[in-house]
Image 1 (tube, helix red, strand yellow):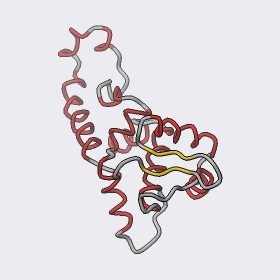
Image 2 (cartoon, rainbow, N blue to C red):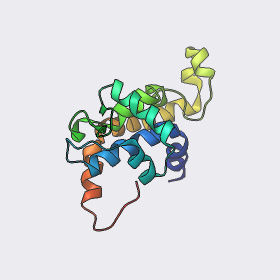
Image 3 (cartoon, one colour):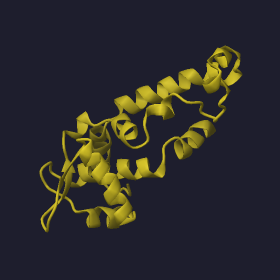
Image 4 (cartoon, rainbow, N blue to C red):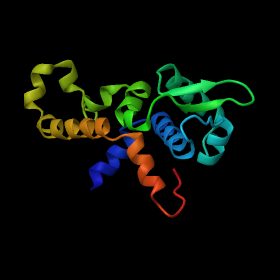
Length: 157
């Protein structure tokens, strides 16, 4: 479906996508307690290390990741992967406005809420936004990791 492709590319920022990929990488490659260094994560995911480090620190400050400094340091999940939803990550990095603002960027309803009923797109897109928000809240890192681990071949995250 073309509209989903457009939403997927533009709905969340690259920063948020990097965060999701890094958390998924940790969930797939860690036994729960094992710390994985930022250098290993950035190399394996082909992401810029310093930028990814800032994202990871933000996720650690928000209790999604544990962070340990030093030669044996790195990152691990702060809670079970089944308890981390995509919504949690999006809300921390991009905020939840992505699920409430106009999908095509028309701002007339924002400044004039009385026009909401007159906007032909608002009525139709409201259900799509609700569905996306529900999907992001229900989809967990644990479900993703389980799916990836069940494959017989390497999957590039």
